[in-house]
Length: 371
Ligand code: HSE
Image 1 (cartoon, rainbow, N blue to C red):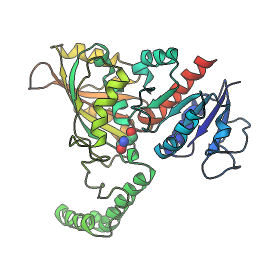
Image 2: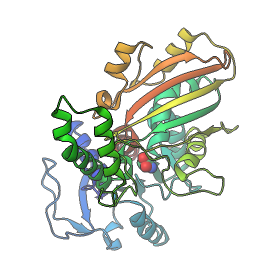
Image 3: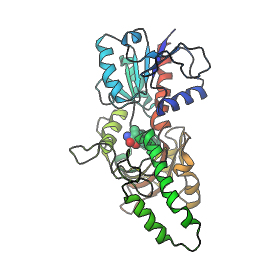
Image 4: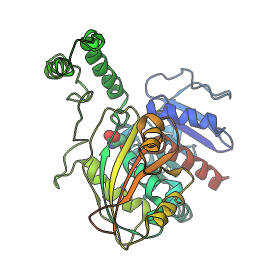
């Protein structure tokens, strides 16, 4: 029987992965083994099967007879363990949500509703390293895959509105702590019909700028504000998050003529849903209705939201989309820039299609390939 090891199953992405695998009854066709970096001998997750106690994720001999390793442990773990395993001759499949190996020559970035053909070619060529993409890139491609598949995209500018979850669990908690701090100092004023919005705003501004506002993880207020910087600086003037848009999209699609993708990535006070506003330069003028159909036929999860206020408010917000696999695309219209310029807006759950779901699905594909 195939043996699959799971590392980092207890963190945020790992927990969402476990939840989805249970929902989809995915723990079938192989023996699952669970590893830990901190609780060797402890009890693994409840997956409805008898599983052995947790094994040491740094004891590499334990990996030698594994056919597949799934890691959501993070980049530092991958950096330390993966090269040692490969140089010790381990030939199993490495599936990872961390970015460390994404741009490696011998890895495939996985997003199978969009690049199944690339994955299948990789499997038949013997590639053994399959990595989940950056959340913003994966969510952009889930929304716009139909346009890419039809070869209609000349370039895209994507302006992002990224949720706290993309920065990590501590950041999600800090966003709430910031909201609580603001709520705490203003609640009496908010309830008082005699208070004015400007008086409340003055209190909020003072709180945001006070040294005691909780900003340990974000480095700046996010609640009642935003942060137009995600990840580290690149020489190009982009942030690394912005840099990933071009390099990862073209690697995922294995384009022969790279398609330029660029924009500004911004952290906003959404919990787990990344949104993006797109300017899409088409390489020809296509009627809007046809574009709508092309986008909706891109995959089973993308959904066109009519460009009206009521439906947009109901269906095209992080509040509506969080926790679901639907990737709505709306605000579709031709721009006054010209008939080849298309505006669009999309939302998607950063922890599902942005992280855990492509990993869950590639594991199934690999297990099928090996069975
Ligand atoms: N880097 C992303 C973000 C999340 O900070 O939102 C992971 O892809």
